[in-house]
Each structure stands twice: as C-alpha cells, then as structure tokens.
Image (cartoon, rainbow, N blue to C red; front, side, top):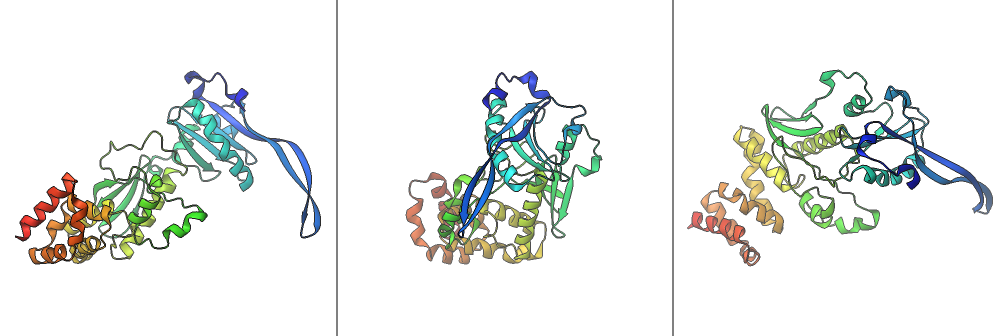
Length: 333
C-alpha cells in the first residue's frame, strides 16, 4: 500500500480517491465439529488510488468502499456502498489511518454509509443540498432544545444558545467491564477510562474547537442524536446529575433553575448536597471551585460540611479548593 501513497502533496489532495480492493483469493481446509469445510479468504487487502471521475458522485458504487481525501474540510471520508459486508468494512477501517496520516494527522476520519450521507459529504461531492437540511433540532421539553449547527451540537435553554456539547465517548473493552460494576455516575466511569473522555470538559461559545489529534469515528449527525438521547434520558430521570458529567449537568441545572423550570428549582439544591455527600473527589472539587455549595442556606451548608469533615484532608495543597472551602466556612460562621 505504501507505493500507492508516496509523493503526496497539498496540490494532490483536492480530489483524491482510493478504492478498497481484495485480491489473491486463497482456500484452506478447516474442521468444524468434525466436518471438513473449505474456507475462502483474500490474502491481500489495500486501498488503491484511482483516477477520479467527474462529477465526483459518479464514483459511487454500491459494491465498493471508497476513500475520499477532502482537504477543504480536513476530513477523510470512508464511504461504504450498500452491498459491502461488515467484514469488508472492518478490514478497510484498519487501513484508513495510515493513508490519513500521509495527508495530515489533523484530518478527521468519517465513516459514511450509502443512503445515509451527511450534508458535508454531499457538498464535497458537488450535490445540491437544500439549505434547511443543514441544521437539525430536537426539543427535549419546553425549556431544553438541542440543535445541530454547522456540524456542532449546542444546547439551547428557553430559546437561547447556552452551551456547546463536546463528546464523552466511553468505549469499554469486554475484558474491562468488571471495572465498572460499582460505578454510580458518569464522572466515575470517565475517571476509570479517562482517555476516552474528550478534553474532560464542556466548552462554551462558537470558537470552541476539538483537538486536532481527536479522530471522529461517527458523523456530526450521529453525534448530535447521541447528545439528544443523553439529554432526553437526563430530563426523563428528573435531572439526575449522575447521568451526565458533572460539569455539564450542574451548569444546565443552574441555568434551568434561573429561567424558572419548576423541576430544576425543586431539585437543584438537593442534587448539590447529594453529590457532595457522595465524597467522590472530582465532583466535590468541582462543586467547591465553581461555588455551587454557596447556593445552600446557612444551616443546610453547616450540616453538610460537619457530616463530611473527612474531606478536608483532601483539600490540603490545593489552592483553589482551599479558597473555595474558606468561602463556605465564612458563610456558616
């Protein structure tokens, strides 16, 4: 495959297409439950650079897997025809990063299935796209709406853009599932498998951008619907902050309380106390540093701190935590 991708330069990346090919069909005899079976397999698999047809959409073939290098959008699209098999897709997927790296490690790998092509892919092919298809939205309830805007997912509260969602993807290998048996929140799951937590934060504003080293393995639309599902489940479970990462859950809960959501107003302070009493350090630290405990009334706060004095040992040496904790002590005395 290396011979096919030598000498690449920026001028070549305008319209570059690779076709996944399997060759050198071999046969071997295997025994299954005492019965001899002839098994066929391909010993050579590669992405072969091809001369692109114009317009680009004429290259699509339901029997093929094609790779489009899209330098305009810094993406590598792996398009899978409807007749291709799961085995073909799996083998092809393993080969894509090597080609991508030859063009730019910041290029995102996007998997695309026939008849489910995202807007950006259609635009790259030169197909006409109805403008109102670009943006999608999902109404969770009268206060919460999730919108897809220019391939980014945003949460709106009472019609106003509030925050941009950054992915939290936990890809747990089967051999590691036992590690999660005692997990009680997304925060704990993320801590165990922290390298799958993207940037470990939620970012705000239209300038928030993902890491150039972060590969995208799903389309923006699929990611959008994943966020919609998470937010909907969170709302259906009475805004239980264990269901979302704490730095998203409490920001949302605070804003919903401020705009008058009765459900949020009823449980906001209770959720703060419950999560503090969990004594899970990253959540406790977040609540203190962001000033959430100051929303509790004086008596409630005093009782909460008195019942969890053991946490004070963990604050030593952390300037931000000590400052925040000091503000709490000032309030109760």
